[in-house]
Length: 221
Image (cartoon, rainbow, N blue to C red):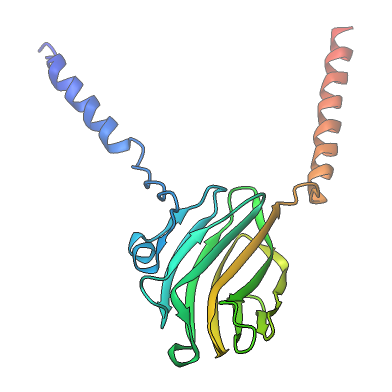
């Protein structure tokens, strides 16, 4: 009995179904670019990527005004943000809190982070602290004391990391505070060191290859 072949149309359909079944999975859409905005709009937007490739997520905030303005000033290898009060922050409204996550660009790792704050230029009364702590490191504490004396805080990573979550707290102890700033400095990943087994494997492979060549030359003579 002769074998009946399937119509070409059915074969194409079968091939198409195989392609659909085993084709590449859909890629996740990249995070939108970070843009300056209020705390409310930034949190609603979710995760974003700044001009240097840092991925930022504002997780939550407390006691800050939803109209307080968040801005990005990243440059060089450093991620930097500033938060300016819609109205200057005072002792009765705090403590004020931020929680945010940050991931370094490909090929970079976190080196250190800093905290700073500035006043509304009332040298007699303005005073406060801005404390930034990470999930893995001690806190970086900055202070402002009258008359107009600011001291920034810095904390170095040990070991370096590529992602971290930060909790920052602003405490106003006198007068008003107008702005707070956080910086995370990055550095290239260290790729200069090579694990010990790799050179040893290379020596073994080279020795075996040399033996093969010697045998071929011997048989050819």
